[in-house]
Length: 448
Image (cartoon, rainbow, N blue to C red; front, side, top):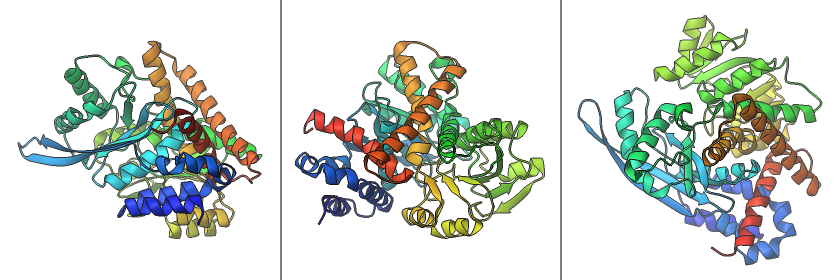
């Protein structure tokens, strides 16, 4: 039995009932075969793979809070500190009703490799709660955030663990979390959270960064293929910050976004999401209604209830911007029938392993999320640099640095593929490039 298979089987025994985490472990470790085969003796001796799939720390806690009617509630909070070989744990906080340990672990594991690709000193972590902010008042969200931080503060810090926002956690929530952290610790540690408002240590273009970065990475992919972004059509999912940033940048660069989606269905806008339509996405996000139909009602475009755009809308490039596992095997089969040539994964692990395998076997170029959506955490890293150095870069400067980082990620992937004599497989290349830096750091630091 190979070393990789041994570790996969050991990990499966230790993590029963965690299918998302195990799916990710299998996908990543299997793709590392070329690197592991060349260095197996050293990796085995130092139990690198065994340590790499085991989180440093798994923190689970209760979060009691009171709603506006005086009714008491209890939710569960999580923080998974997975690997800090190359820097403080770094990764978002997600507030959604389906958050669980399995979700947090797979996202934190992925975050370790994603953060490595940015070339910034950040380890991997993730956290959140099964609290659903949809329909809650500002006061209810504030009280929940304060209760959540009353436990989380023990485990984070500028040089220990630096959370950011994620699904359900935007600027409002980060503000409430930071305010309570500051009160508890009695110190103005503005480097403890990223995604903060500009008035108290945030970075320009942070809300747009994931969407911007995904578009910049796609530009590199298209350049490699001898193509250009201008004139291409895009099917996107979601309508939050990520889809908003992607729509904004795609429109600026001459592309056309024709779909957005929400829990209620998707819209099709043949004229493209641009100009004031992009700005309206911010209003939709702030309304707390979580309904993409609001866009269709305002602009008189087609709304398809209860469906996703995948396999239903013809476009040059698919860019899922919503959540994990939103593209299943049947969606992949429909995409191939439609002749969609490129899948640019923007949200975390939006495509199942079997769907990715099917797409790649049928000639669809898949750009993986750990590379594509690194723009958000890269800009969080730039925010950390600005906080520690007490400097402030302009939007143009941050945007330029982000574009350079995303181009650098693509170059790292190509270099890793060239090193092992592999074809242009971005999924495997991203894993190999991310693994090398983390493994080298773990080897250098000894058994810990």
